Length: 359
Ligand code: UDP
Image 1: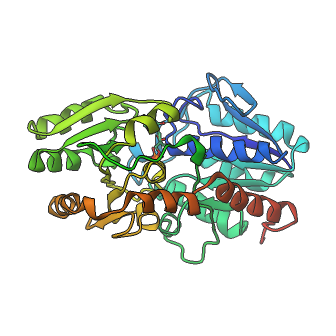
Image 2: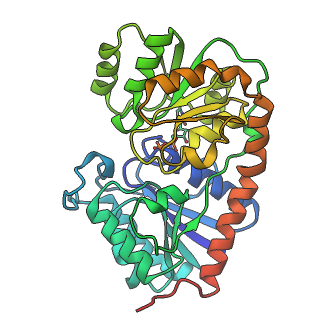
């Protein structure tokens, strides 16, 4: 297959600004290239990848969809990088069998019917904006099978039970994650430092139990970080920085558990499967993607959302989880091969003629 991927528009590919979808694109492309398919990625300038040939285009980055109010109209920067990426894809479409959009933006969905080479969409977040919900649902209704998502709970967040969505999950290169049997005395929290990730609740539980929590991730909102620390001065949150996968996995493997406190419908939570691959159990609010990942009482705990007491209680029981079960789940469900074959089946179906317009 000859595939053109359109990258996220919020930052350069490889910078981490795009969050987990960058890891998904990287891993998927790695598998497809290994299987002999051709993959090109069109992305904002400054983008880098060790595997994927990149066409880097200049243009203004877009703001995070989750940072605007739900009812806000769609905004475009002048000289939009999404417009540039779509223009490129349109001009080059005859060279590809399929174009796969990973940008969570209005324009690529809107343009679906104008392309002659099928344009399909991997939706990387749950519902955050009325205008985006509308165009995503409209695209899915007109072109069944052209929407792919991480999880069922993410798909349901768009509010249309009839929406046909390919549920693709995620996957990682397990050889790059080392299993650690014996933990040390600390916990980890991994993610963009941004309000939707609920860092203040980890600060609360750290202050209550006196546990050390090492924090990894892009410092997206410095003021929010300061606020969380100021709210709970007793908390032992230690910010470590943002690291490439190799180093991240080496630093988290000895943690007692990964704690996840999403305040939004987390589409997936790639950090959960990365932790499991290292043998690190996951304790999360039962909200969004983690609900479909964690096996309650076996590879971690799902607790009532926003309930600090429930979080603290689960932390107290963490030694009951067998770390080998965590690694085993990652191997069974989240290998590169499992990810790649799910996407390949989706792509093949579209190339064979599925996903045409209903109108
Ligand atoms: N991440 C990383 N280095 C770090 C911390 C995080 O590369 O030091 C990556 C992590 O591997 C994951 C992403 O950041 O791929 C976070 O993705 P997730 O799906 O958990 O959440 P999102 O940011 O997409 O909401």
